[in-house]
Length: 299
Ligand SMILES: NC(=O)c1ccc[n+]([C@@H]2O[C@H](COP(=O)([O-])OP(=O)(O)OC[C@H]3O[C@@H](n4cnc5c(N)ncnc54)[C@H](OP(=O)(O)O)[C@@H]3O)[C@@H](O)[C@H]2O)c1
Figure 1: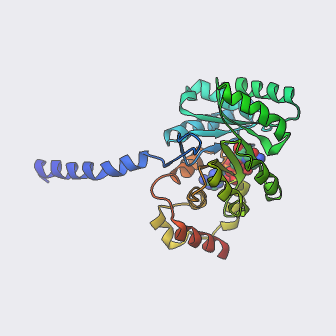
Figure 2: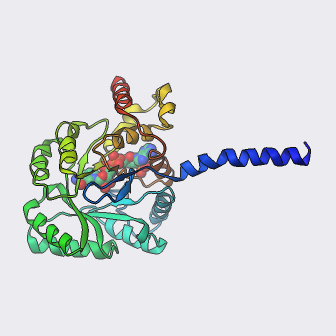
Figure 3: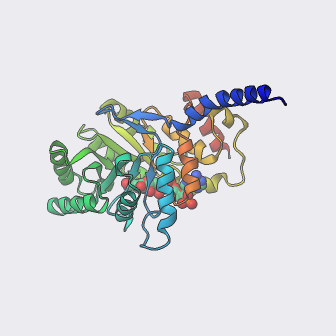
């Protein structure tokens, strides 16, 4: 091949690669309804995975956080209920210099006004947050008391957003009562192809009240992978930009119009890249979501 032809082919290959590379860099964002601030549609949870000691287990978690930010991730969800997780997140993001790139969320999980304040102060220190982006009342524990404190903290700008969480359909009626008060910026609730109850009343209500929604347990704590083990993705998954079951599960969740982001937990850097890739490209429309759910149900 002569030099000119080689140069021409190289130029074609370079320009062909450009739009794809540019598209691959950008994870999809959705706005927090109360402020318009955009958030990436895939975040990360820390229950169990980040509850580790000071030893070698931290190496892969540092890789997880690096890969997460490199892929455009931002929302990190923790809780004082998760053992050492808040401290491990705080120490790793300080070492890696990632604080400014992250939207840090934690929870309050205790009873009593003073106890709640003390716990939230501790969380700010443990996560090295400066100001916390989001604090949520964990599983509605003493929710009336903590909501008053959180509203005060939000008005004093000690926390940017406030919310409530739960993980079980049996509590959705009570969650609905609190969501109806209109006090919260965020709802965090269980929602996945394996747990769809939230779409009956909570998700429509969140849209009406302009509340951001975070899906916890997006893989039903890993049960969804066990359910599809050895089963192929449908041939039409590729048309949706879905290459793995993780992307199938996450794209289905975050394409619900009420949904702001999903927070899968992982201690595996390969899995974090897989999960964040669910935020690339188009999201399935309503017809595609139905087809995805029907296919999953048929397995
Ligand atoms: N009440 C509450 O507020 C509440 C309750 C439950 C959960 N949450 C939050 O929601 C987060 C997520 O829920 P969860 O931790 O119960 O479970 P989950 O995210 O539904 O599932 C986690 C499991 O999926 C596996 N996994 C992750 N990515 C994968 C991939 N790409 N391919 C294959 N396997 C993958 C993980 O294993 P690997 O480590 O091997 O990847 C882990 O076993 C929690 O960490 C927590 O932050 C909050």
